[in-house]
Image (cartoon, rainbow, N blue to C red; front, side):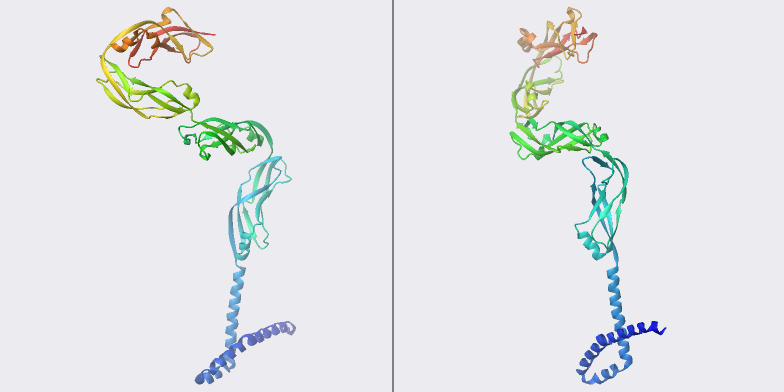
Length: 454
């Protein structure tokens, strides 16, 4: 028993000696020095300090105080904390040339547990990463672990998610035709037009899982007009235009595209055409009256648009409402842009209409024109009455007289055969007239025709 107690006794004696030498003696010397400076109280303090109990209590108090400080400091350094690292990118290790992987999350959350010092070091370190090692795995479904690699050994961690089920597919390839789409084309100046689009290749290779490639309906290069630095007439090259694969519903399909970007050359032009303004009255004026004259302050306008659309235009129609008109009137009319036209030089014009007493006249035996019949068919008149009609025109006498000698150049009866197939039909006759001040009525209003295959 004495053998066991002896080491502890020596330890406590050593501690007491250390406290006495390092703490009690220095403090006693300090107090003696201070007491010498106070003449009256020095003897009292010296007597109080000379007592054994006083020194013992002072030593005990200081020992407990120092122990408490040391104990608290140790607890502070040993206190564990937790730190969350959100949305850490997951690095995947696998043969990217041979396989496609589905089912892996792009990011994971890491919870680090350890002392504050170790946590700080771990967060600042550039050597940590979240990874999944799929090397050595073949095509199929696999359950794999997501791991966190870091070089601070005192840190514990958890990964969320820690395990995932992935599908590994053989990577296959297919060739697709490339097209180009223009985005924000309406942001281009209205007088400008994209005249042509040129790019290096119209074929690209898409790679991925077989079931993904089957979803791809088209591959497009998306040219954003907002990215043009110079929006002026001339040739502009768009560098590194991204390519996207789409399914039949216009949704993006995640496949690899080779090449992933191309250069696109845009030729910007400003096609224009000067056209006459055609005033088109809509409705019928009051009974017994007709339109004697229509004049406007502007007779022609310059239009800007696609070259093809401009080539098909011969005039710019401007409509005015004359329904029930009883006397002359001046209109502020808007110039509406025809289809394919993006800009007009004049947006509004002033139109003046004058009225006079009306009369009517009839022109006979005007040939009927057929329109919009399918090229695989031909139309035949059932009899002579079905190939020609009479047309009654109503308006001011002076206007009627101006076309009487050449009415065949101003009046065009026609039948619209769009959608008709083989058979015999009664078809409505319509009349188109070059003179907008007159009203045209065909007689008869229907004709019988036969449609046959060519």
